[in-house]
Length: 505
Image 1 (cartoon, helix red, strand yellow):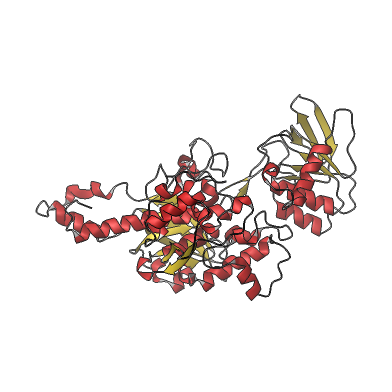
Image 2: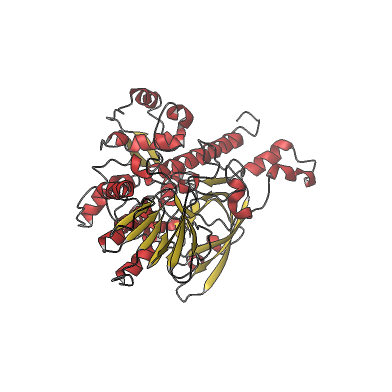
């Protein structure tokens, strides 16, 4: 989809868009859906299982959720996200999901084209973002219906494509196809541009109202404000390039009133920052390790694979090695009884493979006087000191005891960081701790809880994993918050013009 050829928006640098969305994964897709004029309303026959929330919804049944008081609706709700609007939208889309219920959504959607807000969604690959690059053999952590976006049920799409879903959980490849199809069937293609790489997002002005000094004093303040309200403020300059079919790069420069960051956090793998980590036998992603296994590079090796990490991706690597008869040394810093381990949050019946890994972590650990077990050995409360060129690794326990092992490979899976190099200070200044990089759990972007606007940068929004919502279930709340904010500001501007700028609005 050539950016330059198919739209004049990128040829004419004088055009300023109301919104540019950076990232075309589920966060960006859902935001585009709502910016395109789709509005959620309480369904006529719906009764939400939470009677207090239902009573609030009934008070303004005639209004879309976008036009209601999100803080009022969110009050008192609890869920698995720290963002209240994410919890609100999730309970409207999936009532009772945390209790194992598969109740239908209490919302129905209307396309109201007069609410369309012009925007572009820029992504490196096809719509779906990082889902197109995930290891295809593993099941998603979430159920298929939790991966779906508003207006198109995942199971209905699967049935229409004659895809046989063997269970409630699906492989990432299916999810990626669903997202790509969603953009097409919802008529959102005109808003999406693929193969785009952002190199710079810079602020053009801090406050347009500071530009009054050079104005003709004969122009009244009222006339000036009315003129300003008719035009979109050029707050941001977005520069980058698009890779076209022949491999060349076509540069572009866009201007926007608002920018939304929906990049996710999977751009670069977190590192141990230890000696020897750059040796070729040390991998930093599940796809890298999966390819090495599938190509037989580790077949027949007697030396174990070292897997570092205690999250689900590390568990996927353990399963991959275990199922291919590759012995595993599993190293992680936490105690196996740590209540924050992700396995503690997963029901055993729904996630048996992950609980198999957790069981091994607990029962097959290495003690000071024992040898490695033949298939799997865990090393809780250990960390890697260094890797050596002869494919050896030095581990150290919390007590200071060191151990050396010969490896066939190592896989470091301790999280990932977003690539926000196009922002000043790599985007660090947007986080709760401005001295640290942005991460999903440790240091997300600091936002207004109900608008998703960055606390430290007006007209810049962030949603999805960048604000701590790593599950598709909850990132949809970001789209609601951003759309709510833009719609309210648009309405305020229209009222201002209609009333002649008398300051009432």
